[in-house]
Image (tube, rainbow, N blue to C red):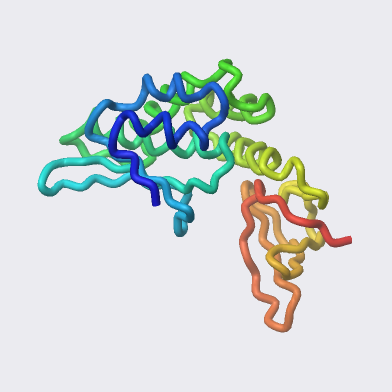
Length: 213
């Protein structure tokens, strides 16, 4: 775990996890005091988290997985930073964690990185669609996650397919087990594990898997 508690530490540790050219923009958005950034090798159950420690004084903290690819690392960091600014803007008002106030902050912060050659073109295109929708489109978010996953696996030798590309009755390999798609919903597909139990699982359409012919 790496704690970044001093402003001077941002350049030294954060930059190696970020897309090239993003650090100068990020420095303008990070508060000078009152926010700790903690990098973890693995972040259980989530990619990042925003918390507030109130004793002995209010101190905000962002924890984020350092194993993320640079484009997703930046988006997750800005996601959590939007929570920080929402908290600062509405200190006495209870707002939904991902309500309109947070969506406005997230859109505004991410807009600073658009058309600055920070993100790969395929990711930036979907990012702009999410910003234009005010992060109210589940379909736009699914396409953004798909673009991020495809960029991450762009050099894989095995050909990967998105769950969204697979039709009902298609089979695929996931974590050593074979699944068969039995139902397709808006942003998820339901697949049945091909074993003695035949238990059904829900898969996000932006996931990449190995298709079984």
